[in-house]
Length: 133
View (cartoon, rainbow, N blue to C red):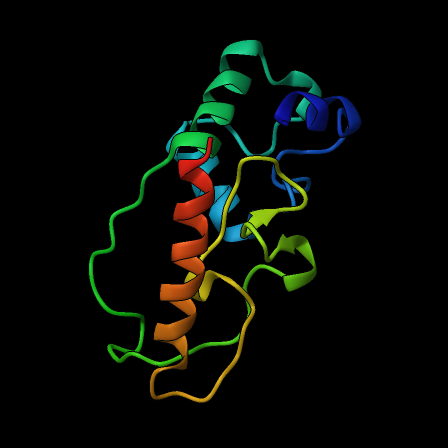
């Protein structure tokens, strides 16, 4: 959680110390979206800003506005490391209650349906396990 993260990174700038689940570019966009200066130390973040960050990190919804940057569909490598995922539930081993499915996972395969099957299967597993909550 961000409150614990703040305690362990008090001397770091926000732009230099981010939660592991975010890319640097995405983290900076979140800070910008909330009008929080990235050159601020974690120690200087007040409760309101920390609550805003926490809320965005847990509830941010993103709209897909089109195809990828190359205007084409294809499987790209990279994503959430497989060792960080419980494949019986698709839940993160690092963040309780966070589930992953589809191409956000670091799974490579032959194009021509593999990515669809991965998305369908992992999505089913996530849905089934979230429904148990």
